[in-house]
Length: 178
Ligand SMILES: Nc1nc2c(c(=O)[nH]1)N(C=O)[C@@H](CNc1ccc(C(=O)N[C@@H](CCC(=O)O)C(=O)O)cc1)CN2
Ligand SMILES: Nc1ncnc2c1ncn2[C@@H]1O[C@H](COP(=O)(O)OP(=O)(O)OP(=O)(O)O)[C@@H](O)[C@H]1O
Image (tube, rainbow, N blue to C red; front, side, top):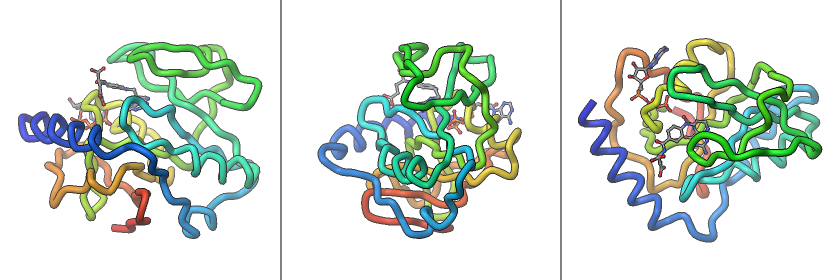
């Protein structure tokens, strides 16, 4: 646990020093999975987090439906709510822009996951609130894609028993498949 805390603090600082003027690559392997009607979960970046916008644009162009996470508190589970051009976003917890609570809830087939850190085995370090850990337990068949800048890679993320590995990681320079 302290391992994760110290690593989070270090990686957030590294990320803050890196993020300017870069964009996440849209790999052919990502495009190849997109199908009309698939539900893709994105997120609105916070601070120096990598922006999944290029992947979301590719998914929209392929006819996928897009959702954004909606959180109301630390203990309530995160829900994924529909996000189309007509959906107004409102600032909620952590100042995150999210759809209004009454937007339709959709079950994601692909989850674009914001990362604090990752390793090449697909292990992930998140904000530490356990929101994505719980989502992955509830959606075991979803394709779990981590989104991060390359400098957020570490040799090995400390793994806990509940951690569910990622299927791939998209950075500004690579598509990493563990
Ligand atoms: N962009 C984004 N959206 C997301 C997440 C995320 O990590 N990033 N989440 C992932 O669970 C959920 C929201 N959960 C969050 C949980 C904790 C903190 C948090 O502790 N924030 C710190 C600042 C972190 C930073 O600078 O990176 C804070 O408020 O002090 C933020 C979001 C859903 N939406
Ligand atoms: N499947 C689960 N169901 C309920 N609680 C869980 C589950 N998985 C993890 N948790 C709880 O979530 C907390 C945070 O876990 P951890 O530090 O691994 O977060 P993380 O993976 O870095 O972040 P996140 O999932 O928010 O992106 C832990 O205290 C853990 O008990």
